[in-house]
Amino acid sequence: MISITAIGSYIPAARESNYAKKSQFDIDDDFITEKIGVKQVSRKASDEETSDLCVKAYADLLGRHGGIEPIDCLIVCTQNPDGSGLPHTSAIVHGKLGLPPHCACFDVSLGCSGYVYGLSVIKSFMQDNGFSNGLLFTADPYSKIIDPQDKNTALLFGDAASVTLMQSAAGPGTWQPGPFRFGTQGKGGAALENRDGKLYMNGRAVFNFSATEVPLQLRQLLQGLQLGIDDIDLFLFHQGSKFIVDQLTARLKIPHEKVPLNLADQGNTVSSSLPLLLQGYVDDPQLHRIVLSGFGVGLSWASCLLTRAP
Amino acid sequence: MISITAIGSYIPAARESNYAKKSQFDIDDDFITEKIGVKQVSRKASDEETSDLCVKAYADLLGRHGGIEPIDCLIVCTQNPDGSGLPHTSAIVHGKLGLPPHCACFDVSLGCSGYVYGLSVIKSFMQDNGFSNGLLFTADPYSKIIDPQDKNTALLFGDAASVTLMQSAAGPGTWQPGPFRFGTQGKGGAALENRDGKLYMNGRAVFNFSATEVPLQLRQLLQGLQLGIDDIDLFLFHQGSKFIVDQLTARLKIPHEKVPLNLADQGNTVSSSLPLLLQGYVDDPQLHRIVLSGFGVGLSWASCLLTRAP
Image (cartoon, rainbow over all chains, first blue to last red; front, top):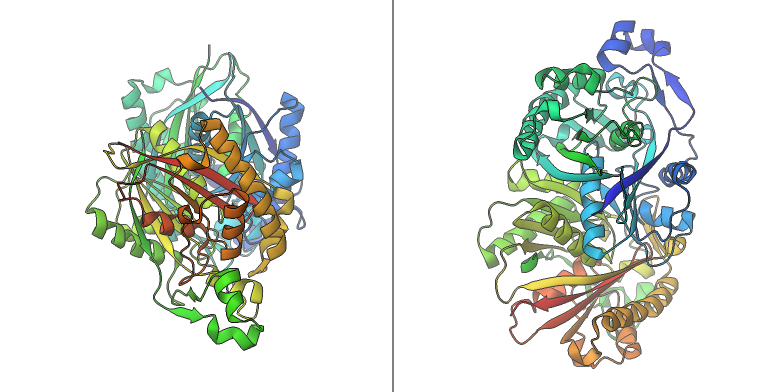
């Protein structure tokens, strides 16, 4: 059984305040705090590459968990890789971390559903290949492609990275992922895309898709497990915006205290938003079942259960 | 048990002859037929996207295998995706093929080792999620990034795509992949990279790495299985060049008749080279064990055994 044993993260220190852009974008405090829920967005340095964000998240993991040997596989989930994406960023991280030659490395290209997908991919890949230790990185610095004049994206997306340590010899208190549910609406993909190097988002279309499909998928997931909302300790939603998380909470009739928000101080960090949120709860012995759900680019959505080993 | 049941492929009809470039690059017939082994390279139309190559490979699969329902997952292996890679090409293919919303889609970013990795990823992902039918696409049209003046790359790489059908309810004569071996040398990755939109290759460095690491990995794979060269019916090597395939054959002392070559008429098609080659053998009842090995971008290499179900 492959489990989550620790999570490291990195959020660049630099911030752009949304309050400083109120007149530029004709927005008010209510829009900032209640609608998008993002007061400031994190921004990497211009010379910081995607792989550098991963290396810094790994340093945080080492500080929390101590050394890990050997690393048998390393996956980076990104759609904004180093350079032009050839070679893959996972190989570059492999080189920067000085990992052993037997380590399997590849990138997975997904956006906001990427962490849930990545958990399934790395779990099954490790299991089938008999691996002991794996690293799942997320790092999708949208600042590479954001147009600072675009109100739809410039106020919303922040840069960050995470790394989740997956281990086969995982003891009590670690988190076992699964089962999973996936969804794709490829025909709707133009609602969120990189057009010639600039991010374009039709916020209304992405919101409507998420508010419809995510509750359906979560009901199916819980029904398949014969569990109700009451049986789940926490629902961690991709931090797309405060508005979408509030809508999902209302539509699924989940008590608000079970649905944490943490995007105010860095923004929507794409595939890093779920692991950044989960990091605050992995060591809490009061929790037994957590549901994760990510949704966005593709259009793509994915949900899973995490169960704490007793 | 997840098995390979059929392979579809697409090679664009347009060709560029290497004989027509003899004076431009100061090369002779011997270089063309004996060293690189590529007489002509395939070139997609300028308006053909990576997803279009996948759709055409899928049409070939349908012609060979008939309809497949439902498709539960779809993976595209590429480092030259549609547009700027956001959304992922697998979602675009999902839309163009009109696949159902429960279908899981993601891209894997790998080069010439991508098919072997992809087999492991899709096999384990399907197994763990209880999926019945999956599609593994490869499509990495290097013509998008080749400098026609660069002798190191313009004579070598061709465009193509493939799709491998993976099924859980797979009967006699289908091929079970595994075990797998993987390798990464991230520090050597600059030997083959996309530099600001143009492919750069240090052919000598890539050759030296391949000629050293691939035989080591194959010996380890066979030793782990307590099998010898004689026990394997075919060794399918990534068609990097005739020279590297000949070197690997000699170093491993494999009889030449067990090592087919098929790059003369389209070139090195990156992650599609192994499935294009394998396609010619999947229906041959005389074969029982095939070894695959891919190597290149990353630097990355991967090998596996395929066993025919009796």
